[in-house]
Image (cartoon, rainbow, N blue to C red):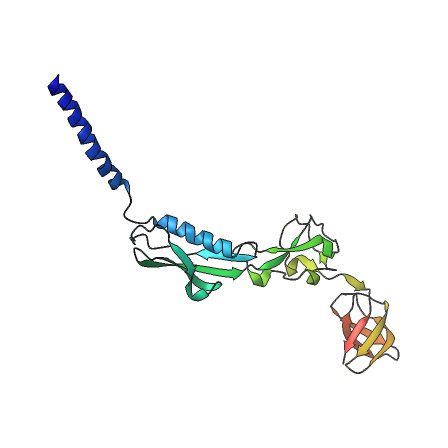
Length: 232
């Protein structure tokens, strides 16, 4: 019985020695890089919350090893919050510092249809809205201002939410061939008007030739009200 008791005590003593050793081995010696990246990304997203910006993150070198840090600190590199920049992740104790590249750019805002549009419709301001462009969208093909589309005619039917491009639209015809039109000539100091006859149909913004009384012809730009403007 004494031997059995001694054996039991020995087992308990060994267990007390082994458990602390196992606990110490479970504590990581290096900080998780994926966790650091996630913290940095959250920091940047919080800084630009509710603003129309596009954010691209770089990656930390997966081969890097930094000592485990209880409270990593994050700040902008040289306090630069936009453009091509970086966030700095650092630890005071143990001492280390890392940089995560970041690109922050304003979103390209483009004109999109708020509803389905049919070919031949004349666009109104309430038919359109500005929305952030998809990543990689070609700005040269985009319409960037709603007022540039208002009054234009849709050339083919399109679903709601699609970006509008100049080739999707044409001007609204405001002048017919043979129509009497008011011709307004103006410069910074004066203006004068007269009546003539349009030699062809024209849409808003198009150049149209007008035959004046006496047979003389002049060229001007068709206006939304059907008049022709000549800028001197």
